[in-house]
Length: 581
Image 1 (cartoon, rainbow, N blue to C red):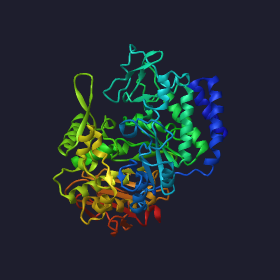
Image 2 (cartoon, rainbow, N blue to C red):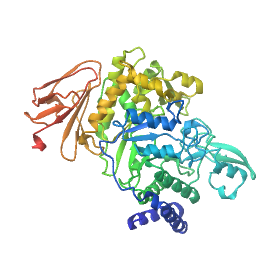
Image 3 (tube, one colour):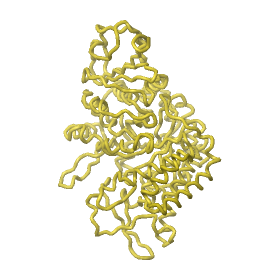
Image 4 (cartoon, rainbow, N blue to C red):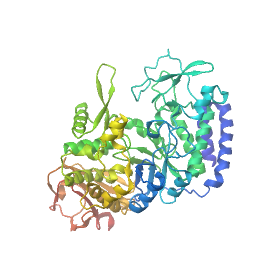
């Protein structure tokens, strides 16, 4: 551990736990690092590039009769996706009791129904992996909580005992469930803090033993093959009555401690914070640009892209994109459109009007999806999450396959053009649609986008000429292949928004070597004609250019007329002139 990191770590431990405890904890952390130093010594510092694209999947999304699901996943990815994605986010693959993996029973084990640690390690030989660290809470079936319930003094302060008569009115509530849950213990009935559900018991990080347990688990994850660590629901980590219990100083300090420790052990580790909240709170987890998360989820992008394609108007998306701060060389946005969860609409508060959000929710319902509402406390309710497969969110079930593919590709052209690292959900990659049977079976709206697929059938559908799955897969594969070959799409390459026509998504990406790619995407179902001069890209007459999508070359002239067919994308690269002379 360098002197700089040591000083930063001690400072944060002192702030959280006080000086006396800080020195003891610091020594214990050093012993942890020494224990893992040999296992992690080869992990050298590296950052992400334009070649990095992540796939998000459950460990058992693809199943076969003869293999454990993690083995099936590896076999499928090596056959179909080796030249498309560089990294794989395996959603919680630990033993769990509820919430599709997010009520973890044992952080240190692989769910035997998925496979074992050897399967994880084998997959890490072919792809960078992202592990979930679900550390705000743990399952009530976990050994830690069961030891607490039995009266084991070692676990007495692992969880948060609360006074049910205290005032919790200012506490942020993510779900319409009780904040406290009663449990019987040898010393009587206790009210325990359970932010998300009665099966998800909040951990007490005011107890330094909990922090040390989590740090040891994180080091184990890096040794087992994790390159990326996703800190789930991290904003809820510290509790202080009289506050929202969200994004507190102690929470940010804990994220900084995690970064200090991982940076000392495995320099290539990338920490990603998951905070589905308004943009300003979300990007606060960048810290000062070098001391907290390396990446934050870009939560406004999914609903804004959906709104853009619904309305055929890019003004709100581009206005928001134009407001984004430039990230540092050590930070980047983590961009996505779909995930295992629904499309959250809280992140567009202040960007879209209530009427625009409601219109989007109504369209989703028309397309076979569902809307989850939150109680506003005044007798009214408003949407907080759209539960729908992203392909269905964009297109009506009666639309033709061709139209669905074009509109879906247009949405992903926005994702792949944006500054930051892109992530694609497994069901988006395969052109899946609403799993209404899954919703019926579980009674949960989020199951609509969590269907399990049979390996052989999926492979046949991907190889069937004209099938929706094949057309979606090949269209995304083409875009990804082009993108990963262009330094202008490096996560930290600059981004400049162009505002010329609300029917178009338009911006310029510029590499550190001053190469430029002009992004022009038609987000409507009608052709759009415009003169090149209207783009105001600042390119000079006579410069050569190439559309990377169509491979068409031409010379730039103000009078050059471009025609974009419905949902067509152009990535126009300047080949000579200007800064390239």
